[in-house]
Length: 77
Image (cartoon, rainbow, N blue to C red; front, side, top):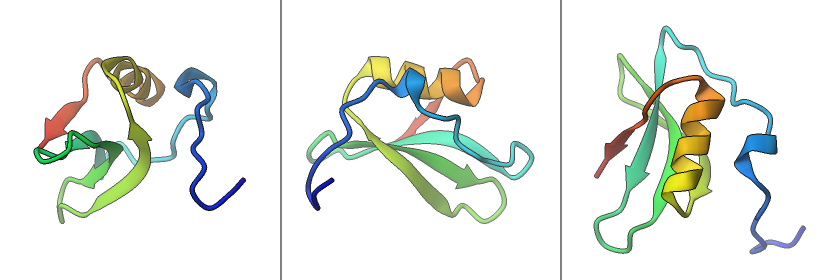
């Protein structure tokens, strides 16, 4: 895979992300400038954000929520 290539596979086939439900929550970071969306995990206590992958649509956000076994994912701007 090249330096600037993208993974265009379906998110449902990806392995579930490893995160500690007690210490982290799934979050989608959204840029107000260019609309870029990044799925990741925010520490509940310290607020540190750990990136998981880029998202392009609401379907991918729903797929990320399904993988994390939550009903919805909070968006941060």
